[in-house]
Structures are given as C-alpha cells and as structure tokens.
Amino acid sequence: MTEKRKPIIKRVEIKQFRALRDICFDLAPSITALAGKNGTLKTTLLGLISQPFSLETIENSLRGRRGIDGYDFKSQLREKIKLSEYDIPGEHTWKLHINEDIYPLNGGILEVTSIKRDGKSNDIRFWSAKNKSKGSGYAQCPVIYLSLKRVYPIAEIYTLQSTSPLEDEEKKLFLKWYKDILTDLSIDDSHTAVMIDSPHKKTLSISSLANSPLTISAGQDNLGKILLAILTFKRLSEKCQEDYKGGVLFVDEIESTLHPSAIKKLIKILAHASSRYNIQIVITTHSNIVLCELQSKERIHECKTLFLSKKEGQIRIDENPSIEEMECGLSITQPKEKVSKKYDVYSEDEVGCEFVKILKQTKGCPFNFQPLDLGAEQIETLISRRIKGFTNSILVIDGDKRNSEKIKKHRNVVFLPGDTFPEKFFYNYLFSLSENDSFWGEKDWEYTQEHCFADYMEPVNDKQYKDWYHEQKINWGKNGLSKLKRKFMTDSSNEVVIKKFCDDFEKAFKHVKNK
Image (cartoon, rainbow, N blue to C red; front, top):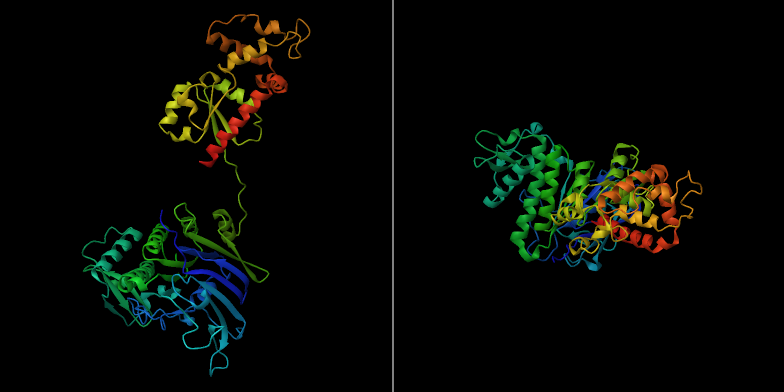
C-alpha cells in the first residue's frame, strides 16, 4: 500500500483580507480548485496563498535556482493583487500552515500581515507578522504563479526571440503532452519545442519547417505556459534530488482559451504530474468540466473543490459541494427535482413478484419488480458469469431452491418462504384454513373454500398448481392480491416467516446498494 501524499501547504487561515474574514480551510495534496462566480475573490485568494514564498535564504542546492524560463520563484505581488487606497496597512492578516516534514519553517506557521512600505506613504507590502528581518517574510519553497498575463496575445508582441532551452527528454515529453491534450495528430518528429521570449512573457511553443512558433492560438499559448511550469518542477526534482521535496503551482482560470476536451485531458496530466513530481496545484476555475474531473472517483481522494460565494458582502467557502450544487451556483438556477434511484428486483416469474408484494411493504420503496420467466439455474448462471444486470440487483428465488449451494452463496439472492414454488405454497396455505375462516364467505353463493378447490382437490403436477393459482386470484381482491395479502399478513402463524424474509431482503438490498 502506497503512503498517502502530504500537502506542502496544509491549511490556510484568513483573519481578514477585504471580504475574506475568519475563514479556514485545508488544501489537497494534489489539486485544489477555487470555484465560484465572478467577484467572489478567487484570484485574490489565489494570490494571498501564493504570496509569501521564495528561495532566497534556503541552505541547500535549491537556493538561487531559476526556472527554465529564468523565473526566480519569488512572488510578484503586482501579478496577483491590485492594491488601492482602500487597502490600509494592518488590515490584511492570514496564516499558512506549512508541512515541516517537507520544508522546515519555524513552528510550521507563517503569519502574514500588511505593513507600510518604507519611503512610500500610500504603498503597502506583505510581510511576516512575527519577524521583520530579511528573508523572514517568506517560506523557502519553490512556487510558480501563472496569472492571466500568460494569455497576453502573441499577435500584440512586437519584440521577441525564439530559443530552445529544453533538454532532449524535456522536448519529447512536452511534445507528447501537447499532442495528447490538444489531440493534434499533425505533430510528428519534424516538430520541436522552442521558447518565445518577449518583454511581456516567456512561453513554450512548437516549431517546424511548415509552422512558425508565432502562429499558435491563444489556447496553445496557455497550454505551453502551464506545461513549461510542470517541466520546471521536473527539472528541479532531477537536479536538486533530495533537496527538492516538492513545489506548488498556482494557475488562475486554468481553462482559459482551451476547448472542453483539452481541459479534461489537461487536468488528467496535471494530476499525474502532481503525483510524479510532487507538485501541489491550486487553481481557479468556472469550468464544470474541471469540477467534474476533480470529483471523479480517480481523483476525489487527493483533490478538493472549494466553492466561493458572497453573502452580505462576506465570502463563504463550501468544501466539495456536489456538481449539481456548483452548477446551480454558477448558472444561478434552481436544482432539478431529485429522482430517487430505483433498484431492480428480479424473480423467476410474475407470481414471484406478487409474493414479494404480499410479504413486504413496497409502496414508496425504491424497487422495480421485474419477472424474468427464467428458472433458478439459468439465473444462477447469469450471476456466476457476472452479468452486470444480475450482480447489481436483488434476485428472488422460489423456496424449493433454498438448499442449492450454488445459488445461496450469492449475497444478492433472497428465497421465498417455504420449500416449494409460490403457487403450491399458497395452495397449501389456503387449503389448511378452516372452512369457517373469515377468508371465506358464509353463504353458498359467496366465495367459499369449496369454490376455491372444487376443480383442484388433488393436483398431481406443477402445471395444475399454477393453473389453480391464476384461475383463483381474481377472487382475492384488487389485482388478485389484496384479500390474500391481508389474510396472510395478519395470520399470527406467519410472523416468523414474514420477518425472516424481510430481514433477508434487507440484507440483500444493503449488499446491492453498497456495490
């Protein structure tokens, strides 16, 4: 069993930061998504979490490292948060709980506050609330923050250069990811990866004799920048080895400019890279595709969604709400009326279904009763072959098969009462009643025991019992069941039989429901 991954940033506590007040939440070790409508401070939250990091004072091979594009892993406030005259020093305070097993930090908690910047009366900076010495305002861990500056249109860049800073293995991996995510079958061995270097940004692009790296779309440009960050962490892990304990990647509006299929594939590759290169990833998103992917069975245990909403000027954060709830929140709609799940209950034939309805309260229950017109042996064969419809449903088998070892080993099987088939069971039950029982009429022209058995005093084969049942049930009340059900259920001699069946049915139902 593999050891559970630990997040680098474990917890965020915000005392106050604009409309974010008295908020606390944990981050996932793999991917955490900050979702919500516009104006819910997702980008602000992303910025303040990513702010206090650098590699200036760390005492190992990570110190002074730069990314493939020359990035120094030091947060730039201007890329994340726009400050105004309403931002007053001392009115921004938050804490980051850092995993000291990964990157040591005194006490494991970095408390950050806003202070007045020296020499500038109307400017503030964020720094450690406990220590004002050089380097103390940052946690020493490699962090990359990708703002929406990464989708600045290449067509508006007038001064740029194309270089190739990737190593051969990195080029191959970039082209593979690029091709897989965009489903671009035109990419082959004639293509290579190059860096676009401009005054506004640096990003990866593809180049070939037939394609200029400057002709890529905005989506390709966005993807190049994200994959460049992943490759940077990969290189750090290989160059710094044991000194590298992992990094944190922050991406604002990750789905920006990408089509739905590419978004889904990108999340899958990011989840893989997160595990492979120990990258904790925090993103903002409005995309249902991203949210669905993060809440899939493969990722729900290592990923998390935090949904932000604003009530009376304050931000509220809900952890892992359902996809339907988030869709309603983003589209400002009401949830659809919930339809409760129905579970199939199969019996050998129609009479088996009727017997269950006599034995058990079924009105309002989540069951679809369906006769199969198959024998118990045939049904057992279908279960043994793991046919999905039969392994994920409740199977009601006639009582004459309860001693079959092959059948009773299946936990979704329930046996009807008695040691025979239902028609014979009810024949024997009614035949055993006194002719003065309340079930029968008192007058000769009413339904009496004599009427019931006149033509079937001594059935000699299964067919005769079945013929008797179908001829007589019209006399047993509404739908041929109500009168027989009322009699059978109120007969004290049947209490043990009924309870045993209902208990067995609930066990089978619980087994199917858990599957």
